[in-house]
Image 1: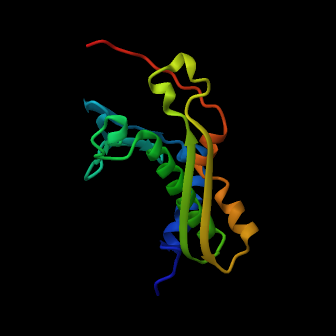
Image 2: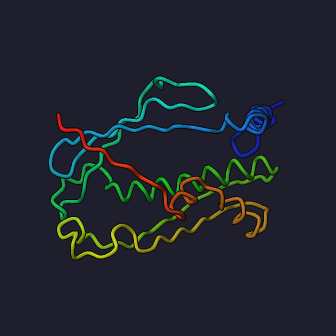
Image 3: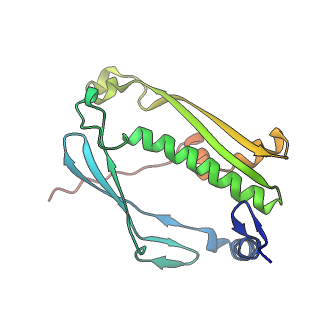
Length: 181
């Protein structure tokens, strides 16, 4: 019998849930990405290794490569999304994934999920940082369209623990070190 909910095999989901709750260190992950500048506004990012489930995963079978760029109006070649657009994609994907996982764990069937996300920002800071005031997004609006028998309140609650959403809602210490080669 194929016992699936929201695209997850129920036995696998239950096994993962037990493993994550049995030992708190199991859920601690270190995610990594590398980025290399190409030219102008273009760069390539590589996502390959990570630490999680109490072990190192040295490389995926196929590393993920993402081109980042800017539109021509910002002197780019428009060969990929901007980093800020990638942040919006990460937020939408995280809310979608979190809703699918949490609904499955709660036994709530979901037929469709679609997220729309929009952010407001002033790019003046890339050329005149001293005059720009606040940098980054001023506001982000996320709308989640869900086809499910669950109530809007239940579905909204399931979305709230998205790791990207939670990361954006609180200050996170970020350290930067520059090494000259």
